[in-house]
Amino acid sequence: MDHSLRYLAPYEHVTIQTLVERYPCEYPNVTTQFQLVKIFRDSKKYSELLERIELFILKQAGFNFMVRNVPEFAELRENRGTVRVGLDEMRDTLEQFGTVEKIEFIYNTAYAKFDNPEPCHRLVNCMQMGQNILSTKIC
Image (cartoon, rainbow, N blue to C red; front, side, top):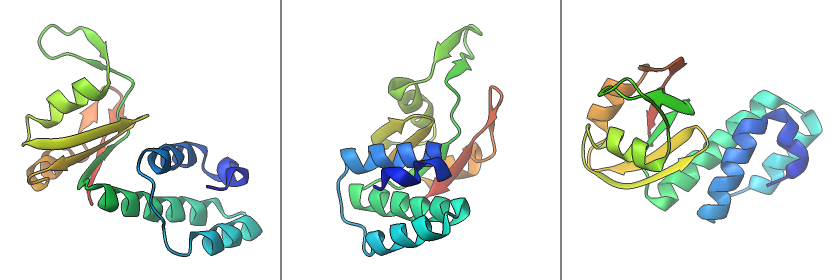
């Protein structure tokens, strides 16, 4: 990862950097693409490149589902108490929609491997959680 490009998409950069550290793999032609982004300083192109790298890493690591924009805190439905959202909370939530074989939570994005991610995607995509609107993607 080229740290000099972080200013173009800081949140995405840190997320992908963490993914690369946890699940190292070689993305083809990434050096050339980073050089082009560096020359043109295009934040949209950089975000698109990071998204392609993210999907590549997820496929290599065996994940098939992603949830973005997870809030830091959420309200429990049982007693209306507030809880910090972490790995265990995301696992409990996602297991309501199917069998979760593997899960990773990095900042406000959860990555999971489902036996069948389609039902979860249909139900959770565009759902509101606190003030955030969740977005999901099948990888």
